[in-house]
Amino acid sequence: MTSTPEPRDVDVVVVGAGQAGLSTAWALARQGFERGDGFVVLDGESAPGGAWQHRWATLTLGATHRVHDLPGLPFAPEDDRAPAVESVPAYFAAYEREFDLPVVRPVRVTAVRRIGDGRFRVETDRGDWTARGLVNATGTWTRPFVPRYSGQELFRGRQLHTVDYRSPEEFRGQHVVVVGGGASATQLLGEISRVTSTTWVTRRPPVWREAVFDEDAGREVVAQVEAAVREGRRPGSVVGLTGLLVSTPCIRDGLDRGVLERLPMFDRITPDGVRWADGRFVAADVILWATGFRAEVGHLAPLHLREPGRGFRLEGTQVVGEPRVHLVGYGPSASTIGANRAGQAAARALRRELRPGAPLPRSA
Image (cartoon, rainbow, N blue to C red; front, side, top):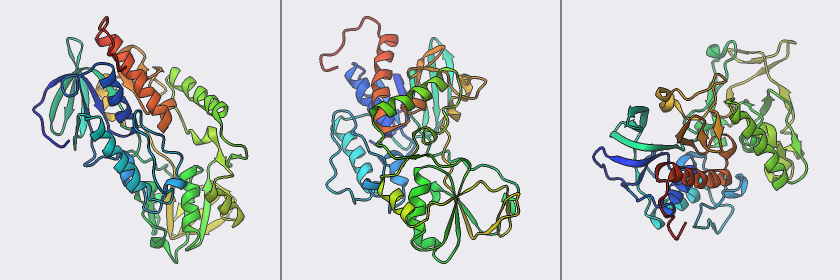
């Protein structure tokens, strides 16, 4: 939907229409919230697909971490070699149509404020909405993180983040320093190293996981992240807890070709490269920061929900002390399957909070 409704009052505003937002919208409808008057989804993108519509063209479905089904509609691509940037947005668009979800786009949420009577005002670049409950499902793609290093502003080459990457061909004939220890860094190294020379730099030694990342390992990681958000700390890097799976084709290939021989983090950046305190120097034409993201939550600042540790203290998806605000796709639910479960948990909790005693719809 791309209509421009007048500012209106609803029960729940969902901010974001990626995996987390769509799974929450589906669950709200099943919990008896009417589409439009009961809830609305405000999406900052101009088309369906969330962050997937901005991934690089060479990222295939087979090379991604699994794209989990949204609830109620299986994702059944015909070819794992298909570009994720095409297949996943098409699936999200079909999902919105299948369940007639009230998504309004493009709408940029700029601030959320309390306005009394137990309500929030959601301020946007297309007018205001008011609501009794809020689900923040904005993800991280719009907040790429680039650490600061001495001399960074003097570098004469090109610096870019994962969000800016399009194709390895743009680096042909240049030496590329890739910074970061996650899956994106290893995927990009695998591609770029086939057309030019690379150096891999990480802050910590990579954690190689030989065994399959099974449900028990997944539960252990989720438990560690949940502990962080219960204490109001930032969730940190999930990759740092899960490790890098050696059996992944791109990692196996990179190890076999010697591409994934890592150097420790450099100490400063010079105009023509990077240098370590021990005198080591690597000349570079490009520095590619595959250094992750931060949660897009700046619009929540007027609510003063952050803890001293700069994170949000959560019980499940609910912000502790504010039962009408839920974060989905944050912390332990920052995965496709985690977002599905969290969206349904948030919808159930909001129904109990906003409609106590109301009969549960038969389809829920």
